[in-house]
Image (tube, rainbow over all chains, first blue to last red):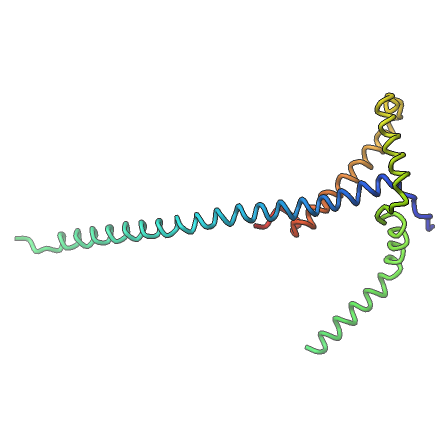
Length: 79
Length: 99
């Protein structure tokens, strides 16, 4: 049942191994490139988050103040 | 805890014993079929490249049977897929890039 191993053509072997190594190098390089890109995007997002949070807090404060004013207006005893 | 560990190692040992024949068969074939090419193979490689170039120049590839052409296509595809295996190893992730 056990067949003798096939003699694989050296060209095929060379192709397999060189492509494997090229693939490893490509994957590592692409990974590091994409990580660096993403790092930059994260930094920008962090900066924008501070601005956005401040803006949201400001809006919330204004809304609650307006609400309080409206409530005070409503609960004022009629003259 | 210790019993779990001993059970686990027993399981692994049993697994190794069970898998031994298959592993031996795999190694027997891999040692011949999957080894990297040696410098001694360079003349053969040059010759095969020369044959391919000659076939491309003279148009001998047009005289291949469909079966041979199909087999060559499959072999080429298999060799190309090694690149993607390498890419997965390089990016240390099976699917996509984890940034």
